[in-house]
Image 1 (cartoon, rainbow, N blue to C red):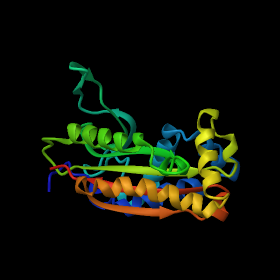
Image 2 (tube, rainbow, N blue to C red):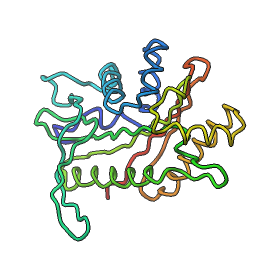
Image 3 (cartoon, rainbow, N blue to C red):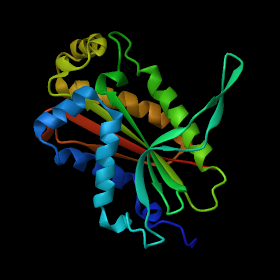
Length: 241
């Protein structure tokens, strides 16, 4: 094994990540959870997940004297890439939501963190369809991760975590989203379970349609009675070759 190969790279699995993401919310009071669901802030959720990673003892993190111990960092710069838009090439800076680096600041594991409301998975009234941006963001994140991790001399890994949320009081979400929420709410006959199920199935259909891009996938469903609102998690590991 490479002397700088991190224990965390071997230990982390998609099933662990979805459970960790849920545990970050167990540690929050109901008002904090509700505020997080309404705001849907990727940066805040990433920070909470980073804290949870640091609590997980078998990952062996934050020990500068241990060559197999890494460091969790947020919004860390990866490898830049060239984007072509309307025939014009443009250099694009590449940052990752959560990374685990070794003592030489080399990235060994990346987690991209994405958030959607349940209604994003089944938008519309007569012919519900998932929000187009879900697949586009997945494609973009897969590309970003592969760009950074290509040609790495040691074993490396990349994961994407999707958080699908609905607040206990969805009428408090930003006004620009409210119309889409109410369309789905009416179509589902004000049935919370159906609303949640159709939204999750829509997001899952996109992930499953891209199955060739992933090595494995895990899901986790929150206890609705505990949260007030509800949240579902999907974590997929990216094929790097």
